[in-house]
Length: 276
Image (cartoon, rainbow, N blue to C red; front, side, top):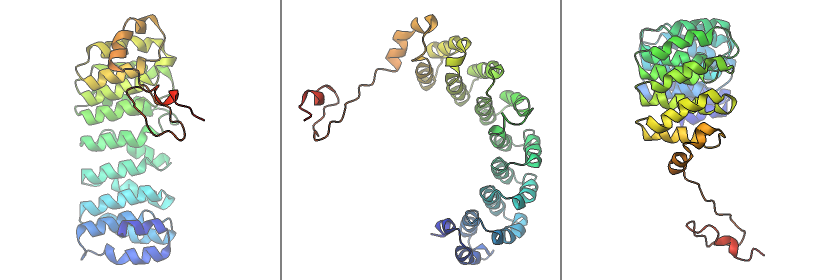
């Protein structure tokens, strides 16, 4: 109920939420109250959030970061820049994701610095915060590329997903290199993003065929099969039987008004009945 109050986006809702911000309330109640305030797009909300960025409980500072990202106003910028330097990594992580929702050169600079944070979840969040800006701001893709070699798979996965948003084909080789990552989630991200690009770049066919034939993860082999299923080329034709085994043809029964008796094992059955 408390979280839902914010959806009213009214000063009356804010007044109801306000008593639950006090330190005498249980932590979960205060967190929920903070998140609820983030849904109220009124200037009167900001004075309630300003003092809380210095709260002794990191969980509350984390909730404030999320709320500031939801509000996304100019008053949020300075507070988020401070939270991006918070001593607790989970607060910096939340602030990085929140900053990604706001268009601000200052926050882009701070997020770029976050790519070198000491905590891997913060680095991953900084990548995600920058991902949607990767085609608009020069240099972001180059700053993210080194994280393809990060020690932690979460960071490498985020880097692959962010680089997959780059529109020019020059990034394809970086995505191809991720196909050999030892972590399955990273390879999954690489196959998915290369699959979205393969129709525009035939050079991506062979790397995807390689994953189709040799990857140790069955889900990755299935993703590669889906990516190649509609590609017309000699390389794909040579593995077409394998693709069809992994991604069998899906038979769809056509629903005819007034006919309720379907047998999906024999999809033609419904169509043999008189539709009139």
